[in-house]
Figure 1 (tube, rainbow, N blue to C red):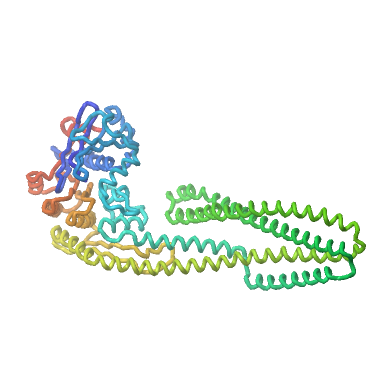
Figure 2 (tube, rainbow, N blue to C red):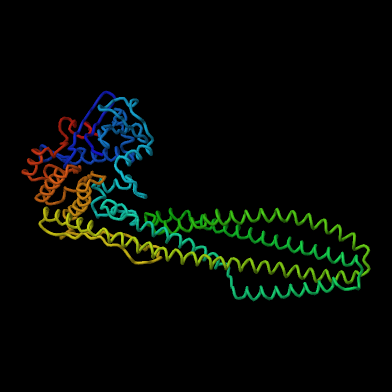
Length: 583
């Protein structure tokens, strides 16, 4: 995308129009005619903010509720070239949650002529216009703060404050045309291992001793076999007639079904206890919901580490309730259906047994066999419970196997990604040369720009395995002027590299970063960048600066080369401000 011009409009026409250099440096200049006047507040930053709004950024409340903007029905528009097609992009302050597109050669002042999009669809359009290559996890909305650095928070370091390191380096690596997916992909494996470890902790919390369980299983199996032997001997005796044998058979079958009923009821109760236990843990987790307000009252903010730990614990138990709980509930339904069938069969056998028992002569023997069968039933219930717990323990071993597989996969993938980074050695060398060339032009010194792949394997939560770390420093950078210039040169390195190689994203904006550096060096750098972009025939670099911060000779040269695209001041009854009036 090429930005051709920025327009401030209302329903009757254009209030202000700013035309930009389609290739080269675009200086937005703050001026003053009297020494006592200020250049702050004339609209330099506002102009950059409006371009940012037009590229998808949310419009702040200050603009959404400004009486003058709303009363005058102001909308702002960019005239752009997207893949060779000219069009207009607009945002209307009375409708901040929408974006507008006009596929025409000239602007219309009636928004009904424009295609109205939701802000989500508008952002997708902007992203497609800028990012030709589809990169998973990379969005223009996330890149925008690096492409458009603001004077308030953008120039304290090469990375932005209060943002996760993984995402920051992923975006910077993308801008420098280095592997940007490595750390994220490896972290996905680590996250899966962490979930599996949580499952193991849950199983271990049940206090399972596999040795004792195995011994108990063997004891119960032998006892049940002995009861079966006694029952079988009783069934073969000649002491009783055929009715007695029938009674024994039916009684055995009845007890067998009763055993199944008890076993199923026990397992059903066990599943329900597991569900209740998970729900109790969720209740305890929810009791932590007030922790955010606690932290904000005590220390004024909610630490990222607490947020992450709280969210991970809550996500895990939500996952367990949803998945494990669902599994248990499904099992309960199936068991209850089976219990219904067993109880019907039990009723049939009980009726038949009651009929036969009336004609038996040996009630004492029947009572003895009934006692044996009842004891056998109790042992079988205990055996079912023991085997249920052994099964849970065996699942832990299966989880360990899965963890080992994932750890081997991390080793394999990390080795592959490290080789991928090593293959980018020529890119790294060219980036370092570009950085030092800019340092020589600006300060006649060398700086330090380095890219290092973190090859350390670790399952720790704060591990950065797979991250392409970026280090950058210049001499005497502790001064504000030098620090700001370091960040300027850092950004210009990836920007020039992309322009030289004709990659997408050929726009860079720096708001306020040239206020503090030495006046003798800022002009040198800006003229050099302008010549590089013209030589390569691609790239737009926007900067805000005050006239009194430039050397007279530099200002005159910028004027003669057409590098100054806007002059903003408080004169002409505020008509020289960005909007043409004071907000």
